[in-house]
Image (cartoon, rainbow, N blue to C red):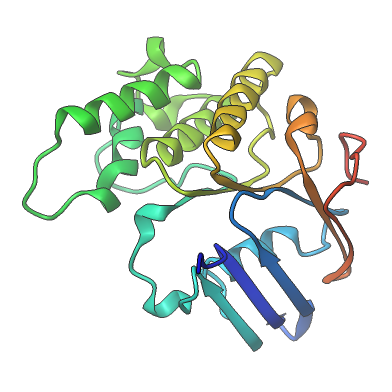
Length: 232
């Protein structure tokens, strides 16, 4: 039996004494193209981070492909796109180096990068329109360009499930259209996509399921909702 990419039961998250998520029961099925919608402060980003095990649950249970996050080892199956590029204090990395880091979960400690790794990185960079910026320092790019780098990094890993936290924020219309084309290909290949969004833009026609949060609760879960392209 195929395990669901994500399953949360009775999920509750407390932060600074405030209930951010409460009573979340949600299963993301394989092949879902799902948008997580809702107003600011509804708990959208907290939900996906809790599903990934990045934020601990105060109550309840969550699983990734049938395994609690702390015991999950097949991270090559998951591609995660955060809202912003982490700014480390080490040596500045080029766009290509950041994108190539998306292949790490597929590599053993002793195996150097292969032609398949390099080809996957090339495809991801091209898909997000970053070919001419591949040698540029990623940290010096605009916010929208950095977001494209993060998406390319996740795609380079060729994950079964892609989780994106507001991937279109600060990204120009042309890059949104390129991302929509890439997601269309992923959907055609049966991959799973979970996307937090305010403005769906070109992605609207791809969304087959919309989950709406308000005050930390799921108030609507519609597998056939025709979304309006923008969450309130």
